[in-house]
Amino acid sequence: MGCGHCARGASGYLMKLEGETQLPAAVRTVLGGKIWVSPALSGQLLYKIIRGTDDGQSPLDLLSDRELEVLRLLGDGKTSQEISKVLGLSVKTVETHRLHIKQKLDLKSSADLVRFALDWSREANA
Image (cartoon, rainbow, N blue to C red; front, side, top):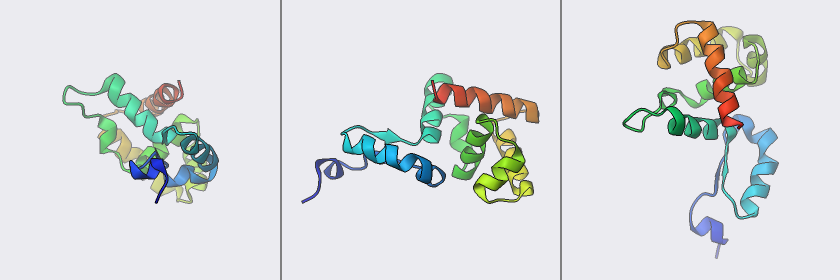
């Protein structure tokens, strides 16, 4: 016999990178009978609602989990060097993720990417 929440399926989603910092809050939320969604994923869902296309698809759906993590950290004001330390990646790999994000979101410049990340972060935390 399991708990009532488990019988109905998952009550939360937490991205690996956020586990260390968000896990206690996620557990408290789920144990309190509420649903927990990772801040990065909630931002993606919010983007879908606010800026989704007619078919309900968001350009953010094209991003991998790692690209979403990089986008979230950019939205937190982190530089590529800082992101590389947080994620344990080389700066070159972070720059490659940034390039792929720009391509997938059809952004023309690094400034556009940073502006988008900051706006997305604000919307997700609103």
